[in-house]
Image (cartoon, rainbow, N blue to C red; front, side):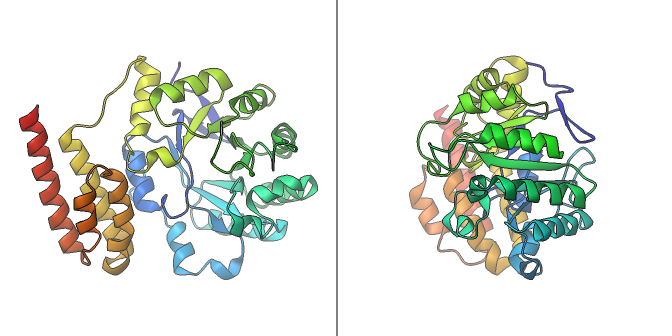
Length: 334
């Protein structure tokens, strides 16, 4: 598998086959920054609403904040959601004006609160509206526009191929496909065959998403589907090293192995520091609790105590002490 000069998204040459999927409450700026440092080629923001009344809320403003330490080779990608073409176009313009290099349109979210508003994956039931939204957004900005979809609304209405060809014809620059219908949500076998059929039928890059949790699985999905890249979502929670591990496997045909004890501790402490700085003490200590539960699933006694801590100082002291003690035990055992 080649790892250089792989594909383009508009004018941008992308030399990585790994992408961090957008996830509400997870892919904030600190986590996107960490994943980029640990090998993710592209990272996508949490989904933001196209309703302009939400743009100046703390929640939305945090979702679209970009890393000031972003390298020149990295890209800011903002995912927008909505069902009104004019509002979607305005949201795209707003985010480009505030630093987005690429806009990503969400037509894949299965959440009820999103689908109730006829947005997300519910749009897959309305081809005319899909066309209107894609035309409005692509005409409103001078940056590449990506699209995220599922294979259809349910098993009786799979239309990923139809949507993909419409998207390409309108000018969408890349297409991510979660290999399930909206009805399946995140349960059941992923339809990699559907992704393969789409990838072989259009010329724009296709990104395969769904149940990719290891380098071996990533390699198998790339080979079977012919996708340009894999999009990793839930498997990155507590394991941001998965991106470098996948890239290493693509290049060397062998596994990279887990991070060293030192690298493991440094990444977690760095992530915690960035979360505290980004959100402030009151919110930051709460936000990082869920991340630590993902990092240390085998340490419920410690995480239970950690979840009661209320200051950044207490969290830093407790985690630093625990990781140091835990690493010492591992080294002695080895």
